[in-house]
Structures are given as structure tokens and as C-alpha cells.
Length: 301
Ligand code: 0X9
Ligand code: ZN
Image (cartoon, rainbow, N blue to C red; front, side, top):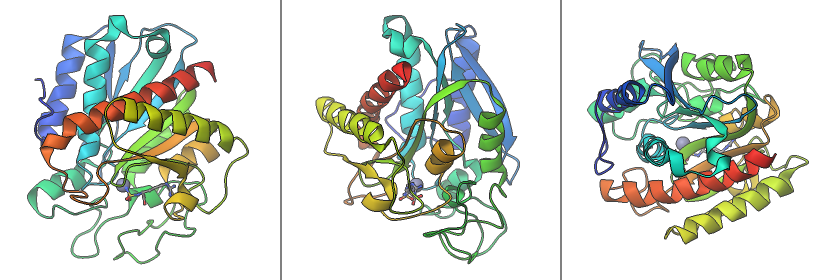
């Protein structure tokens, strides 16, 4: 294993090597496991950071559901690095949470964006022009509804059924099979600078949406405080567009995880998915500020 720099986007093997390095270097704090394998047989890995106390609440953070959103695995690994390097000085609401990080949920797609098509979005089931399933239309809460396509060639093809893909099935199996006290779920995407909460499947909100809105607004303020730009807060279906089968809706709707968010990182359109590497550190730094706010709320939830 080895360290990363966050001054460049890394290939899959480099990111995996970093997770190995952490597990080797911090065996008491960090546990690394494989929760499934992608369509092309690559491991889907989960890194847990925990002080081992019983009774801790739990937060899940993922990146790389969409292959071309390179800023997201970079951001998740940056957050992991910050927590581990500063662990002894973190406040109780960080230390007394069990953190589960899945930095790269679509490893096949990520490799494909490095080797063949920089703007590939879906996973890599099948071949040719119509390959792939949109993993963020493949989760099982109101699967197949608005904003997801039945056409395999579409960018938003939801697959043959809910959790038909090993990448999403791995998440479902792990979270639903775990006895952790899940209070937070954060899925990083790009781009647009949004803090989105359920529901995404339609233009409706859950009964406790005011809690999600308030914490989202506080997170957007923290981003500004970290020197970041403005992030728009709101329910996904109203704020962006209705899209069913997203991971956030499943986390809240099926798993009943209160603080479920999709955070769309930078930028707001100048570079889009092809965000220059010089933006990694500022973007990841502001994302960390948002995560801390969601952690504080999850800690007391
Ligand atoms: O469309 C998506 O999957 C997300 N935007 S992206 O540009 N990264 O593809 C937004 C998902 C918001 N949540 C739900 N619609 N459930
Ligand atoms: Zn995305």
C-alpha cells in the first residue's frame, strides 16, 4: 500500500493501494473488507473507521456510483485521510461514530473512463453502445419510476430489476444485514453544487423533511465557511429532477436512515465532470465541512 496526494486523479489500483496502506498502518482504527464484486469481477471495498465502542451510531459515505464523476472517489479518500490523520483531536461526534466508507462503488466504470470513454456513467454490464446500467436508478425504493429508463441504451437505464447489479446488491446486502445504528447516508456525485435529500423519485418530501432541510442549510453554510462556493439545498425531485431508484431514496425509504443525502460536488458547469485536478483539494475540503455537520446531527439523532 501507499499514500495519495489529492493533487491528481488516481487510477483504480492506486486508490485500492491507498486503502490497503491504511488497513496495514492503522490496524486498530481501520478495517477493510470486500462487500461484493463488480460485473467484471473487481472487488467493491468498504473501509470502516471506528473507536470500537459499543452503542456508536453509524454513517455510510460512498463515491463513484457514476463512473465519470472522478471528484467523488478523490473526495471520499480525502475525508478518510483527514479523519485518520487527525483522529485523536476530532470531537466526540466524529470519534463516537462508526464510519463506513465505500469510495468507489463502480470500479469497472471508473477504469473504463480512464481507458476508453472519459464520460461513461453506468456500470459495465454487457458491451457495445448500449452497455451498462445506471447504478443510481437500480436501487430498490420505487424502482422503475420517473426519470429512469427502460431502454438499455439510455444513460438512465435502471436495469432488469431492482438490485439486478452486483454493485448495488453489495450495498443492499451490507447495510440491510448490518446491526449498525445507521443515522446518516451520504452519496457523493457531481456536478452542480447541490445538497439533495429525499425524495428523488418524485416532487414530494418525507414527513421529517424540515430536519433534512435545516441540516442541509447548515452544511451549505459550513461549505461557505470552508472557503467554498454556494451549494443549493433541497429535495432532489423538486430541486434537480425526479429520478427513481437512487441510493438516497433507498437509504431513507427502505433502510429508514434519517439523514440521507446526495451531495453533488463542484463545479456548476464550467468544467462539469472533467473538473481539473487543482480543484480536488478545495472541493474535498468543503465536502468534509458538510460531512461534519451531518455527523453532528446524526450523533444526536
Ligand atoms: O441523476 C442522478 O443520479 C444524480 N445526479 S447526477 O448528475 N450525479 O447523475 C442525482 C440523484 C438525486 N437523487 C435521486 N434522484 N434519488
Ligand atoms: Zn452522479
